View (cartoon, rainbow, N blue to C red):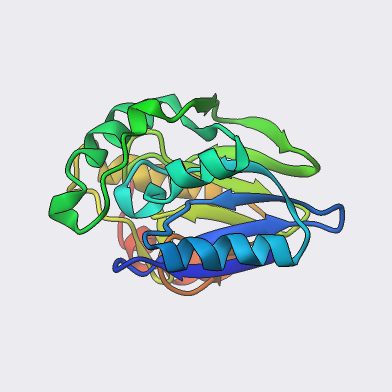
Amino acid sequence: MIKTFVFNHFAENTFVVYNKQGDCVIIDPGNKSETETYELTEFIASKGLSVKGILLTHPHLDHFTGAKILCETYSLTLSMHKEGERILTSFAFSADAMGFPFNDMDKVKKNFLEYNTEVSFGSVKFRVLDVSGHAPGSIAYYCQEENGVFVGDAVFFESIGRTDLIGGDLDLLINNIRKNIFTLPLDTDIYSGHGPKTDVDYEAANNPYINGFDF
């Protein structure tokens, strides 16, 4: 089961993935205000869920602004890829200019994940996929049980993530989407960091940014 929250002034999608066993993970905690944090934690409490992991798809501020408080609340580390750590900590220091509260991400303990591995958080399981190109260390989390993949800002409905920020690489992003996302079962739902849900079948056939490039 998947619950989507739209948080902060970037309209970022934060996901809670949970199962019948009552285990859950939080993907891309973008909760910025006390109200948003309460909305998220109250949902988890109301369902009687046990938070087993706090996961990051990529190290951009709108996706991790709530990570510090949630890691403290649930006594958890932040799971991400090592390649994103430098950008994660540098973004925290430019928070004010972007309208976010300051969070010293150096003090948040990290659990570094590797690409092409299977990881478990309690009874919630994912395959870790490389979708670098929008940002270094970008991860997509494929959950076979939920028939969904959480891609951060790699793929959107009929679009892809921007590649003009630090560490961006258009060719790398497109190749990773083709190799690691479009090879999933066609009926796999794509949960993006912003905007509506889509699926592999539709994007593989209709995404103009993928089909418009010939490699």
